[in-house]
Amino acid sequence: MSEMSKWKKFAQNIKLKRTNVATKQNKTKCGEASKNTCGSSILENKEITVQPLATDATGKAKKYERTGPQEFVPFFFEEVTIPNIIAACNKHFKKRAKGMSCDVLASERGPSCTKISQLPSLKLFHIRFVMTDDQMNSEGSSTAYSRYSGINSSPVRFGSKASTSTRADPIIVPHSTSAIGVKRKLESSFRAPVNKVPKSLGITTMMRLGQAITATETSQEIVEVSRFNINDMVWSPPVSVHFTIEKEKFAEGGFRAAYKATSKSPNFEGKTYIVKRFLPKTVELIGAVNETQEDHARKSIQMQALANNFAEQVAAKVQKDGNKNVFGKPFRYVDAFLGKVQRTNQIVTIEQFASGTFQKYVNNDGTISHNKDIEKQRKAESLVHFSFVKSNRKLFLVDIQGGEYNLTDPEIATVSGIYDNDDRLLFCAGNLSTEAYLNFFNAHKCNAFCNLLGLVPEEVENDA
Image 1: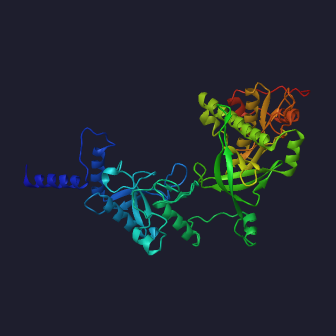
Image 2: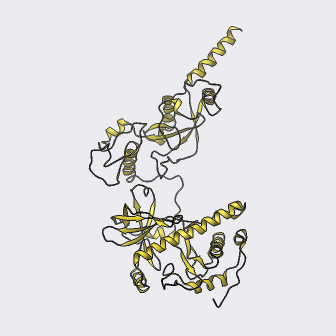
């Protein structure tokens, strides 16, 4: 072997060694041998591929959301190490990061990495930008928060062994990156938002800007929350949940008024909810049928559970029959809970907010709304028809409404009267029974979605 060949082989081996990854032949291509190849490719191409992520993890899964597309970042270092990756990203994103420092994560759920061996692959680097210790100190960060360590991001709760506080409330003290997120949100609330694409404003929104917009008034309430399990036909024991409830009504229907709410309690954080209170006229109506508000509220949650069961059966059938792609996205019902406000003993229902433009497809009296979104309108009608057949033609869903494919607040109509053998009201006060049956099935025309569900036109009994 010539001296030049020996030198080239030696130089190549040094390059591979500098990736800080040992080649092992018994590893899969996703393991260390793959890293070795990727590390060599990085040094050869002088660039890395990165996925920018949000600073803070959000949602129930505590995931760092993507803030933009993947990007190529120039990499002119001779070793693939975490410090060099950070240096390359800090330089590349200098203007956008505004003085913050890069943090390399193992995945979109973390954790932060301090050495190459902690990364599952070198093909794509997940990065976010955080404030450094010096920045936190110079800006007067509260000592109530732990400073960013780059590794630990677990929350600490009041009343835990790690805390000297005696509070037992389910309040989370932000630790590590959560503290940074709180500080950044406070700062950003006084900074004009920067959007690449300007928001399209409707005329209603434009006219509203002609009036002074004030802060939304809210109240803090502790609500005893229970959930219904349709599989076991039982209610869960109540748990105390802290809600921040807006004082101004979000909407009002025929039976209840709706108020937006949020919570920081475990299992309820990170989502918007709708707290619904009975209207005075509804309370009178409930009393007229010899029921309590709590029993009526329980039945409304049980109805929503049954409605969701019908919706899930629709999804399961189109999947089983191989018609999922033809049928498209099916409807679902949002989670709903029974609540009792500790301060007032008021009975409420709580639902997850159904985002999107609110639409009504079928009214509670069975009349069809003929919505402009023809596909959703026909799917809604097929859901009503499906529930009728599945119940052996004893009952069916009505009041089909919600945002996009997330439905909420259904009613159920029974075909043969509204009382059972003991003269007790079946389902809720919106059960219009025969009237709803005649209105719907006299107007409904079976469509393509009915066909996919194996439904056939009903012979309406107009003397039912």
